[in-house]
Image 1 (tube, rainbow, N blue to C red):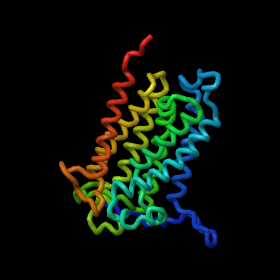
Image 2: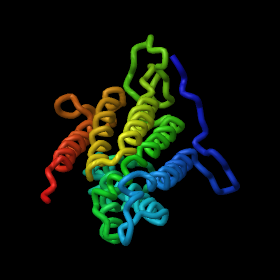
Image 3: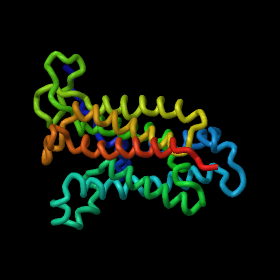
Image 4: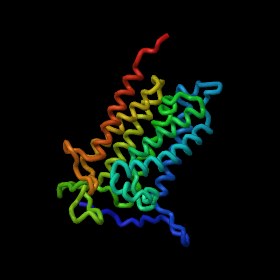
Length: 269
């Protein structure tokens, strides 16, 4: 079995200023989104849209700015509502204590959806067109976030068999080897989902298909990864033997199926 490396969470210390690895992974996520978004402008149908609805680099920059706000606000509020609602109802001011940790992907996704709706309305673009543009650019950011989780030695996996070659002992999680679930999620909902979505989105698709593929793909891969990830200590395993992360994936998958069916509807001429 392996021992999780004792990585200092602070990447660089300049006097009182501490730059954390986790902050750098967020910066990498935003940089990757910008890099991919600019290249997404060359894909159809975005490359051929002209007039007031044309896409530009400025649109990518604005989506990124609004998306960052959605990730931070939605991720924090989602964590408070999904994982510790009673605690934060009793201590509402601690909702703003983001430095104490606590972010939810599903809450962040809802925040990004709100940001995309805001962007679409302000630019006069169809909301699903915006969602289709953004979806393939997201998984690399998710991968970067899992790298941050691994560096911090947090969100570790469930106890593994002692003969698992990559079973890892995490500080603070006892002496038993565990699945490095951060790596699983990095590979599944990060790299693999990115490759599949990017290749799928390279060809013209019906409006809503790429966004629905993201919902289905992430929901499925996250659901699988949750079988190897240690459930939150204060929640444990919920009904039907599923974790909170898995339950939150259910509406995501159902939403992907509904969106896919809607995208396949015949267009009236």
